[in-house]
Image (cartoon, rainbow, N blue to C red):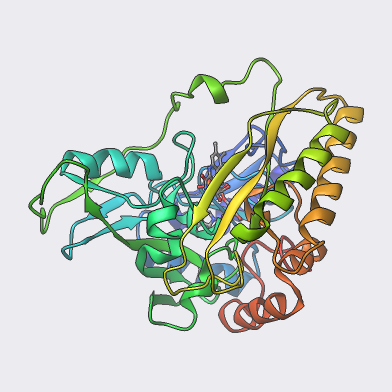
Length: 380
Ligand SMILES: Cc1cc2nc3c(=O)[nH]c(=O)nc-3n(C[C@H](O)[C@H](O)[C@H](O)COP(=O)(O)OP(=O)(O)OC[C@H]3O[C@@H](n4cnc5c(N)ncnc54)[C@H](O)[C@@H]3O)c2cc1C
């Protein structure tokens, strides 16, 4: 965006104390937004988010929602003339109802887990690796982790979500609401998540901890995560992963096909040992993640990009295309596209399937009829 456009947005949204972001914003893939400078607001409360969205509607200003920028597909990067809505100040943590914790969408999951453990509790499902994804970002991707084998997907462990829709209405969806499963993997298309009431469990070896009813805290922001050696980057290295969801009976087939794909592309990525996260089916299906009511396993290829030159990037995209073809080759395979490199309407249509893509579009038409939120990422 031109400096003049950014200043004009800053004037329009002056009451929300906007800030100019002068430097280039990037995400985990090191895709960067060409639209520097940009104008950013970082509200602290639900009603402020609602007022921002209402004003954006009045002025027809598209909004780009950004949390930790740990996605790979550019969907957290502002496009031309977009106002950047950062969720990093939505960090309130409250103990309101035994068995749950209510958490601002900007809280980083690993930071939340750290505090819960001090109270003798734990999160059943959170990302593997190291601190990065926020609560809101995890919902937007779908969410699974090492303990999904016991506790299912993130969708099985969220009791309630509050969000501001694209018209500026504050809404609440409980796990009994038909809309609820569609919010997982929805990539910020249906609303700005404000907070989530999450199920918690006693920490291993804690017996039955006493619930700190009424306690609250402001979780700190993630500054510089301590990255474990297996993820540590050197210089210009970049890490990419390609996750395939498959029922267990097809896991061996999937591994054979993935190994063949890796062999063909071993000059592109330095592949790492294959991962495998079984995901229990606990009764709820998140159609944008895996549309079948059954357990499945997340497996896939991951590795370091060997050559970051334009030729190396072209080779990476070729690998991605072949991985996409593999994921589309069997009706029971699905790709975890929300957390990966490719994006754009045709990609989501292919990965979600025509019917679920259409259903998401219908929800979007109701909740964000002016297509203000994350415009162009999932729908044209
Ligand atoms: C090191 C690493 C490990 C990972 N491990 C796992 C794993 O084990 N399991 C797993 O499921 N995923 C994993 N992921 C993927 C990760 O969960 C997703 O990429 C997630 O979306 C990143 O969250 P974020 O807070 O960085 O969101 P961002 O990258 O900032 O945003 C991602 C998308 O969500 C939207 N969004 C973010 N917050 C909100 C909100 N409050 N309201 C509405 N829209 C919002 C953004 O607009 C954007 O479209 C991992 C990623 C990394 C980098």
